[in-house]
Amino acid sequence: MIYAGVDVGGMSIKCCLATEKGEILAKDSFKTEKDLTCAGMAEQTAACIKSLAAKAQVAESEIVAVGMGIPGTVDGKKGMIVYSNNIRMDHAPIVKEMKKHFACPVYVENDANAAAVGEAVFGAAKGLNDVLLITLGTGVGTGIIANGRMITGKGGTGAEGGHTMIRMNGEPCTCGNRGCYEAYASATALLRQTERMVQRRPDSLLARLWAERGRSGRVPFDAAKAGDPAGLKVVRDYVKYVAAGLQGMVNIFRPDVVLIGGGISNQGDYFISSVSRRLNHIVFGAGINPRVKVRAAELKNDAGLLGAVALAVKGANA
Image 1 (cartoon, rainbow, N blue to C red):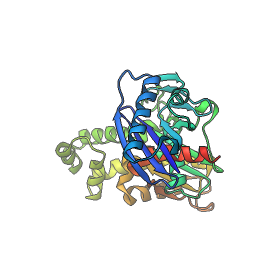
Image 2: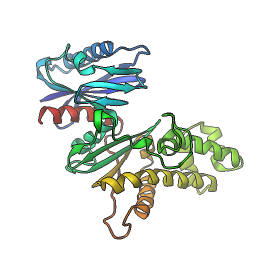
Image 3: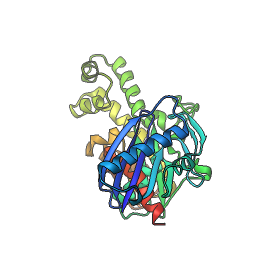
Image 4: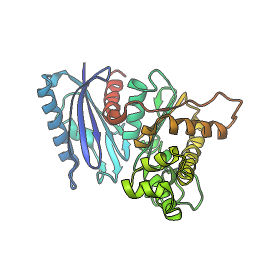
């Protein structure tokens, strides 16, 4: 059986055709237009999927379902984009518009929620019932699966772990509040923390690498791995921030596994094991309750697409 997956982003919209096992048969993308309407997005997305079907020699009637992962508040039950600042839409009936182009079912969810489902169906959490995924990118996305069910909250407004407060009156966040997890643990926050340290320690290896390579999240890790005190300080503090936000969510949901995705996860075991050690030191019942397993997410660059495919597979087989 063939499923379509759609990963909607502020810069581009990616589409794919895949099997129920997560094998991608074909994929493509198109630019997200600045003034894109809901109807326009549906039309362009449908055209992209149908073009992929033609290239892969798949009849449109063979597509069992379409899944879509979209940033922001998404009400999957109503098929509605409630609010998304990345694509400048609110109360947009995306499923209704997509159904104008497809006879098969269309499923939509927040992109981080979809990515968590993708990891549970195809990736590092395959076969597990309780999963917490965080993605460390421009912001902090969270997806939660509890007892095999995706946690979305009323009207799709829940599971926004990136906007839980970890410090009163702390760093300003793009959401308008201060002290949010995202303001400390996102890749954007890491760059800000690195820049501040460079200003304090202009004679450090960290500062030299920052000048040579520009603003890159790899710089503090490379400096730390080389033993540079400034780089080590940035990375240690960042690990503490990441673990601090995870602590609250883990204490509530106590998942089988915590998965970390986004570009920072490419630092591999150097980063993941550091977060694991810190998290398992500060969670409730540390040293008595079972250790929390922390792993890197597996789906990497295809996480959004395969998350959307997983939505379609689960929806069609519900």
